Image (cartoon, rainbow, N blue to C red; front, side, top):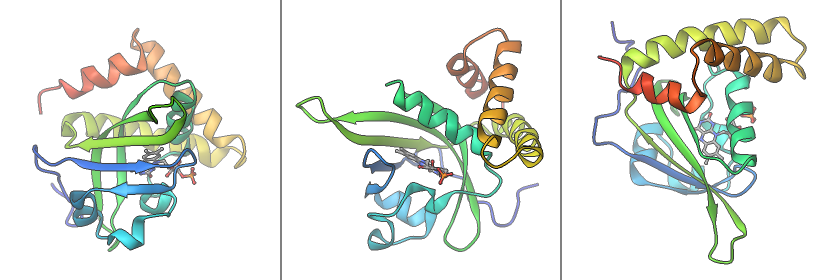
Length: 172
Ligand SMILES: Cc1cc2nc3c(=O)[nH]c(=O)nc-3n(C[C@H](O)[C@H](O)[C@H](O)COP(=O)(O)O)c2cc1C
């Protein structure tokens, strides 16, 4: 059953934001503001962890930043918090954003409605990642849970990117 505080994106919803190289929000589209429940002045200049949901494992964000620092695009499932304490799941694509002079301006994120069969699978992995993090020291937790996630991917015999793309194809 659907949780009462959950917002489910429509299939034509797109949530867009841009950040500087450190992850401070420099742009948010209208749909982002409507769904997250923040006004533009409340978002601009704030770190993107403003909407971080406590159910999200640190290892996912470690992998996200590692991917971006390797100049690759990141795909993944993210549970975000709204201003009023609700939540919404997204399928996010984050890419480095370069100026025409090829210097890094920041990052660009486009999220859309996730496949909810995939969300069920991923929430289970994220629960296990948080359990691993709870047993580690704060400094070791993100790396330990990221390695666990990457091990799950290896066991599927494909890359992380292939795995999330397969998850998006699951029958809902
Ligand atoms: C373009 C971009 C978009 C991001 N979007 C989100 C997001 O929607 N939700 C989120 O929790 N973190 C997002 N992050 C990651 C945050 O910057 C941050 O790493 C994360 O919330 C974990 O917080 P922490 O790094 O303070 O532990 C995004 C980062 C970038 C570069």
